[in-house]
Length: 236
Image (cartoon, rainbow, N blue to C red; front, side, top):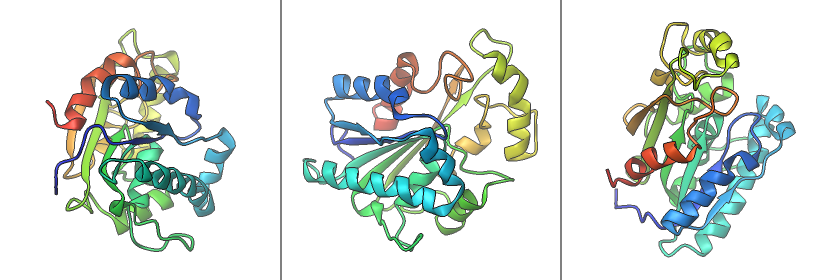
């Protein structure tokens, strides 16, 4: 595929039960350091609870599509960069697709030429039906001819001061629920092996939690953004 302009507009879709204000620092950092226009998809916890069903995915992806069209109209390249955290990264893979979903066809690959995912559960032994649907229709980097895929995983030591008490007590069960193996390494929620999308460019961040519930330093912490952003842009 052709090179991607690092200054083109950016859309951020967050993760399950995480509201959009959690991504303010990430959006501000990109705007201040890259000069890109950044929009975060507005979401509530209620919105995320509805994503147990296909219509809940459609509600959020309709918002994604509306914002992408807005950003595309002011993009010098006519393209948009997508960033998805956790479940948001899997949902954006579906958004790129050209097959009908709940009566809609998004074909986001035509307007978005880079997808960055942060701790997204791409590969799972026990995937939810909708996540499994994504992997069936659009395995690995399905639109690699049109989209640059970059996935980031976190490796959090549960003995570190960064790991929250919640992470220490729940990580093994989360890893088991995704991959059937409680002993895997991961970010406190998603195992590394799940977060690294097959065939994508990727990066593993040490001492990095899935989100604020799992540790004080996570993908959206400034010190971690400074690590993964250059790799995502192809600078490093």
